[in-house]
Length: 417
Image 1 (spheres, helix red, strand yellow):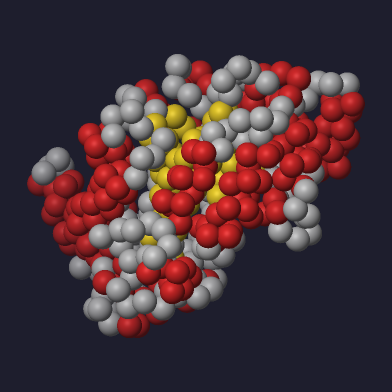
Image 2 (cartoon, one colour):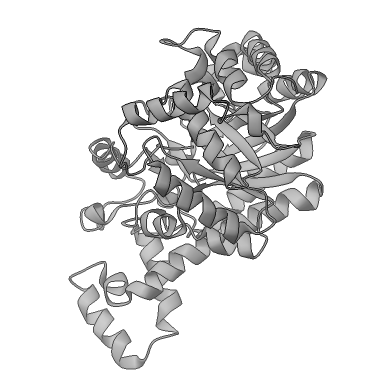
């Protein structure tokens, strides 16, 4: 679900004390569990890389009382299912010749009474710690689709996108921005990229009896993206038909020395252009799924707080929910929100979503069990329809033990599918 972010006005220690107090009083977690609540567990792709890993994960989730799995089947631009569009991850090794992680997950999860939603990382296609080894990876095949930050607009202006130096400069810059930029992203501004993703999602929906498809990283990493040459050319063509001749002439003169002339002179149009293309991508992918499997739930992760989502990621989820472009949304609850701020933001999304289901995406890595239970209680009091705990691997890996997932789940909801 990306990085967990958020402001804080209460220390983690204070939250822990409040949470423990409420637990002892019976005021947090299972005591207020709504009927029909979605109790979902996010499962990263690295947790389904072998048949044994899939079996352990499904058994652990069923025993802990989850009823839904969100399984990452497209991560870092690599497939964890049999795709005719994108190569399977090399992490599957030789097992990839005969082992299908998604197929096995579906069989075992359905037998255990669990629903399976395929999670697709949309715009995030590569980390920077280690670049993909396969030369057929998207970042090598279509470097022109990669988002470029404002800082590199001038540097990359004269570098051919096929020159290894183009990707090299982008990677080096991204590594220096780890605190705010998670990796390399493809841009929704390019029609070819949208068509590629639509084909990938179509491939997924046609082959597997999924209960849902969930879109993650549907965003720009920061508002300084995407100023690649292709993106700037698309915006220029779009905006020139909507401004007067004098404005066009001014922009053309400035563009000779500043590649960002058009975004600089028309900032409102620039923001609307990028937001609308991202919204168009969400709509297109949703329509692909529903045209193939009409009963499939289509959901997406969103940044908590509509103003924050637009300001930080150009993610206009208010439009997505008000127009019914999705069947559910999962606002990501960062690790440090104070109770008043969290309460207000959950209230906002509950009100804006109307009858659309809302699942609280709760990061657990930086929280104690009591702190997680406190967030769960806040989500339930605000009328959210489900919980999405992030994530399986962090809950069962050191310093946690194999019993921690069960302990946490039993704290926040009653066991049983």
